[in-house]
Length: 267
Image 1 (cartoon, rainbow, N blue to C red):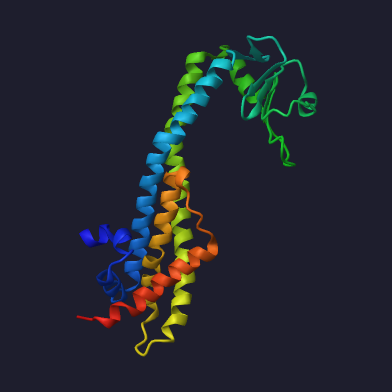
Image 2: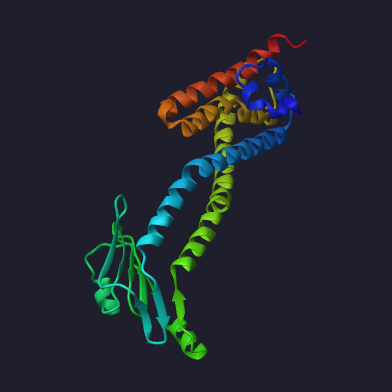
């Protein structure tokens, strides 16, 4: 068990590891890829915790501070601010525009290039740097609910902070749910690619390895490149320029090492 847990490090030099790998089936390769995915998720979690969340929290605090309190009534949205009210971020540029005096057509024709346009009865989400059609959110259904309840919806600063905190709490789980399968499929396709290269190297051996062993070997042979990639992500200031040809050469070297060196000393 300990040897398996240390496999990403042992894959850099251990002859015994590669000898055992070549005796294993394809299930060992899939297990190792799942283990690499688990380690990647741990790394992504810590990076998000210490890098992404502080940035997200800072942005949300700024957004709540500059956003005025609003009220949704049966006649539409009302904001306690002089309109038109445009909010610009120092980096992102125009974030949103509040103007309840404009119709839907006038909002769509607005030239401020804001990401979100807020009107009296509509909200429009758009990418100002893309040709995609804007997404229009109709507030009339919510206005009808307010009319039936005879109680306006107050969007206060405490409510904004509460919603922001809930969204921030969901950032890491959603990100990991997206990244984990993507990483596994990525490394699986890479391992399949290198297993084909291993088949070519297998032609130069007198005793041929079955494909299942070559696939498992490829799963372990990608460890050095994976570790370099993880290090580059964790320490951007010490980025290693691992271009595709160099990555292929390094992994192919470990394929050769795993296929030919362990067999010299089978005892």
